[in-house]
Length: 309
Image 1 (cartoon, rainbow, N blue to C red):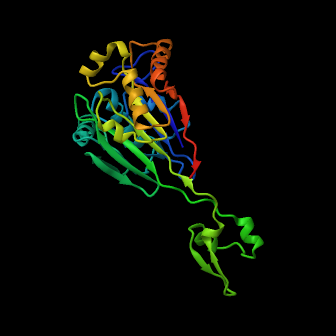
Image 2 (cartoon, rainbow, N blue to C red; image 1 turned 90 degrees about the vertical axis):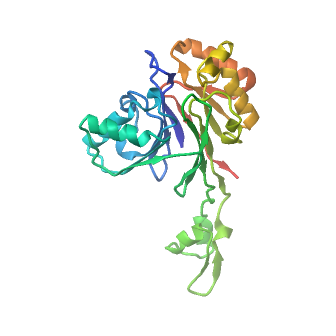
Image 3 (cartoon, helix red, strand yellow; image 1 turned 180 degrees about the vertical axis):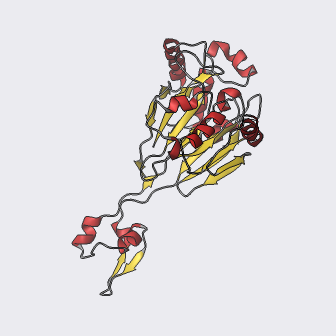
């Protein structure tokens, strides 16, 4: 799976960067993707990627500021105009349903696919069998959440060559064996699927923060994650200004990553005052505290590889 950044600017777009949206591309057998936030022109950004609206399964909104949701009505209606019939679920703070329904009603728009809107609160959001998502309240000027995505552990692959060598012919029982079940063959021999499975694969974890000033909750949200995505709206010298507006600085984001035991930090949501070159300076500030920090930019892709348990 991977993270594809569609917008990395805070508040308003710049010539080089759009406002907030991140695609969580699951790939693999599901071949679906989720969005985290949907700032203005997100659908335009999507046109420049391999992602398709019909494969969009869920959208998670961190909070209802415009740079995080003003692209939502357009994306929803364009999805209908493109003939997409696959269902879509939206998640976000209270008020999300009123926003979406009002935008559609007053503009005379509609959606032609099943649309579910789930207003979240702190705690469990969903478990779809592959991922568990939990919402954590952040420290912003309006209600705002960060989302922790935890992938369930995956069993090791089935050693089909070894099964064949042991005289177990391919067939429906392979699915049972892949689940680690015990199977009795026609001749009476008992085969334990667990004996033919490879090394289990560790589920991956990702923490995606909405806008936030420093908060103790951040350490729980990001505890031990493989990837932590955190706003770095302003440089360290502007800490007072950042915090007074519910935002964090470079060093504050990096400190969370270090204290939470995150493996990687991706810095994003930079003020429009910073050009591409100046963002490198923000990255350098983060790296003084947390060396394994990477810089997000529009259309940057970050792979999140599997690792054995």
